[in-house]
Length: 305
Image (cartoon, rainbow, N blue to C red; front, side, top):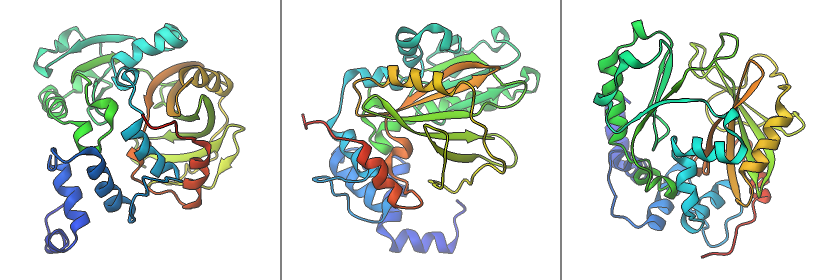
């Protein structure tokens, strides 16, 4: 955001805006998780977090951040280890092959990578370099971006506990598309091992911008949105592989109060993407707001430990 007089005035007069901006720059790292989450929730959602009696999906995600902490979650969010977890759980045929893993971007030998590939950081959700033509890749810019992402702590900003102990690394994997088109992303929201809602993200890298559409598991389109991104301009067809993705998500999510299992479909083949425990970190409202409570009703919180 450009620094304008309006921005400066808001920073000086709005404590919630000031908190988010300072947190994004690495502030408040010594603040206890609960106090930090309460402040961030108030700043992002506009009301105090009822942590003692959460009712909505976003509220319950904050409770899970604090009270549902299992070591296996760290493996499941690590972009490298999650692939091994998926291979062990649903089969290696669903996992995109890994081309290499490095601790520093300078250690990547680009000459050994194929003409098309994807680079991503293992410990966050933004360190991504997509190469469709290596001859056109700006390697210094890619190295700079990856090193910047390696220094960023996803845990410290959003307090998503599973990321706290993920080793920051860079992973390369094969580039995959669907008949020459970018892949649609099928994000299956699973509650207690059962899929309930599917978010379809398309055209993430297109000039027209990302689109998002929510469906139930019978592929009925839901009049729901969560971000500034609108629905796809055309009806999203039900994928022939839907039942397979639902089956795999049940296997991956067994015994977990909530987890989102993401898949792609490439030329009829289902591919595992990643697993997410806190979509939008539980800090973005839904439209209509009642859908937040609808999703919350699917989630029964475990006993506090």
